[in-house]
Image (cartoon, rainbow, N blue to C red; front, side, top):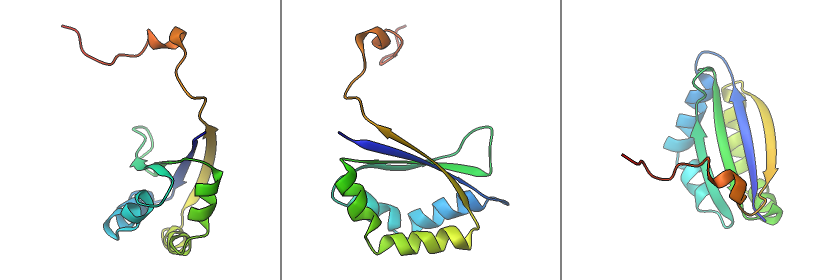
Length: 113
């Protein structure tokens, strides 16, 4: 059962975006994506909030998250968060293994002309 954690990083003067850019350019994002059990690690920016960056971080299970949290990368990430004076809001979701048939009619998977 996979676990997805949405982390909203907020700061001032574009610091959340600078944080995400430094995480990417430093190679930390690539290392996290290559960790055993990582399913997704992607940054997004809400259209209505230029001072926030959303990280969607998905893992196979809690064991994979625990191993990630115990890795040396976590101290580097914490230092970067501090460098950019970021606040965090966190949401956690556990996959329910599929989309119900009743919801599928609302999902567009191809454009019909």
